[in-house]
Image 1: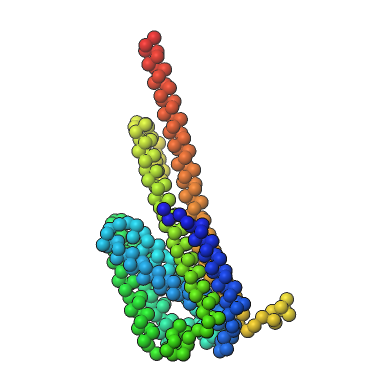
Image 2: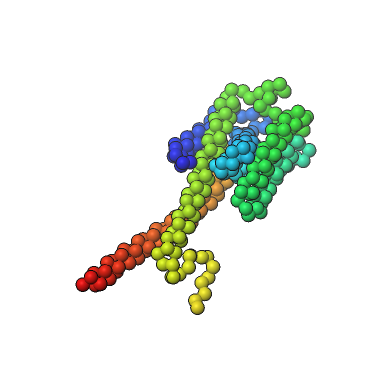
Amino acid sequence: MYSAKLRTLALATVITLTGAFVLAAYYAPIEADQGFSQKIFYVHVPMAIVALGGFVWGGIQGLLYLRTRDPKHDMRSYVAIHMSVILGIGVLVTGGIWARSAWGVWFEWREATLVSFLIVFLLYCTYQPLRFSITDPEKQSRYAAVFAVTAGTFVPLNFIAVRLANPFIHPRVLNNTTGGALPTDMKIPFYLALIGMTLLFVTLSRVEMTHKLTRGRVRGLERRLERLQGESDPAGLPARSAAPQVMA
Amino acid sequence: MLTLAANFPDGSGYVLAAYLVFAALLLVYLGITAYRLLGLEKRLTKLTEEVDGLERQRAHDATASEHEEEVKLS
């Protein structure tokens, strides 16, 4: 189901991201203040936006699961959060590199933007341990959905709070009111990178969901085969087990 | 090589590092996915072999029971 149009999506992702990075390197002008190192912006910021969007999407899917109890929403919520955490690692590392080149430090604890992203990231790092510490599948999905909804609500609230706070050193480049608006030749590669990063998120999410569905089908087939083997040879060997067999 | 490096603008090392981190992250993720896919393929191969074995066994059992009936009738 999720594998449909995967090839087209993957191709569109590669083309868009490559195009965006080429434009960022050769078309976008070199920023007057930071120089060439500002080019990190075209990978770091789209990745951060998509990661935060993914967390919110995970919350929406969690809410849909709680309303409908349809396992597909639980899986979508899980995959969205999983992918966003991976992108979050990228955001923190590329952000650290950019901070080092622009401000001379790897991380600035007095900057609300950086600290808030770290808090959101660490919050979502607890999702998987929480989820897999529950053995009952129904409870697991329900508790994970509640977490996804609560944390997903926290993300935009946190974002608004940070935008309202006074910036310490982190610029607010996508805000027209403070004079930090991007020029058009920077906007084009940036928005293309944002589209590419979104496509990457969708493609990898679909790959993950296809893998999970296929694994589920294989498990189902293994169980059916075990039953068939039991029927055809009831007095014979017991159902296959990972545990070592002791011969009498 | 040094002349080539001198032609790069200031901070290009950081930019390269940031884009490499992104590429590495993607490669690691794809590597893990490929590894998991390989595991799934192995399970499918084993499953196919078991189904084949079961079919052969059933065909053998059917032939044996037919032969028994023939012997009884004769």
